[in-house]
Image (tube, rainbow, N blue to C red; front, side):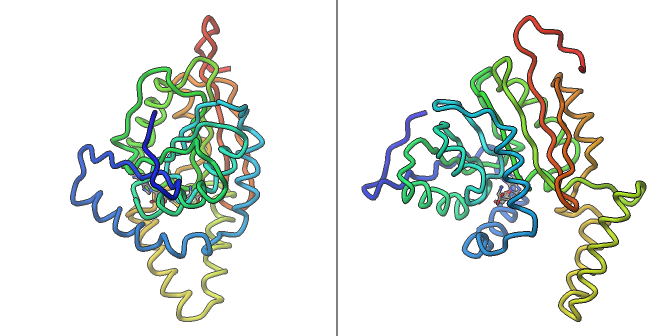
Length: 258
Ligand SMILES: C[S@@+](CC[C@H](N)C(=O)[O-])C[C@H]1O[C@@H](n2cnc3c(N)ncnc32)[C@H](O)[C@@H]1O
């Protein structure tokens, strides 16, 4: 993909406005608003999650990578530093502008930024080696998560990898779910009125699945297997954060779950 550079060497953010809706425009504004402070919001344990993704990613110079919900580049930048050609996709142009500035400052000229809703994003079949995503896909509806995993299976070359890092938990059926929910409630309740307000908002958002729609590691596994991925690796990293990775079978290899 060839993209013109600005005089300062900062790659422009390309707009891919396929099927923009009132809902997606609202989402975009919400994330644009958070972009200036995003790098300082740093959730606890994020570094461990990023390190896990980078360790699983088998990147070499020239590996073609797509980062879905890339934000300001927590994965895109280190992957580009390892020599990958990275397409960073995000609904928020403001997030991507920050990512592009960081890439330019680091002298990385193989990062392309595309402002798009991942649900509507598309690529040619077998055009990519690795697709990654960190803490973005829980915002998608479940049917869209599943459809996206299937789309990724089409974009990947045989032997390519999908690595999803995200909050992964359910609504309290398992002991792990209950431990995660309990620790979050305790943490927020201890913060006084501001924490109680946040807790109330989270109960509504997570309870009614408005904007926050995490699913369990097992559900992600089922999406991966359903799309034909094999060699699954499921890692609960810290608290609610987990990583699920899988490979598209190499040509000639059986497509059934391993
Ligand atoms: C929690 S942030 C994570 C950003 C980044 N991956 C990181 O590790 O810091 C979620 C990101 O997903 C993007 N996002 C949310 N919903 C999206 C969607 N439907 N399509 C594309 N990007 C989306 C937001 O703009 C935001 O940058």
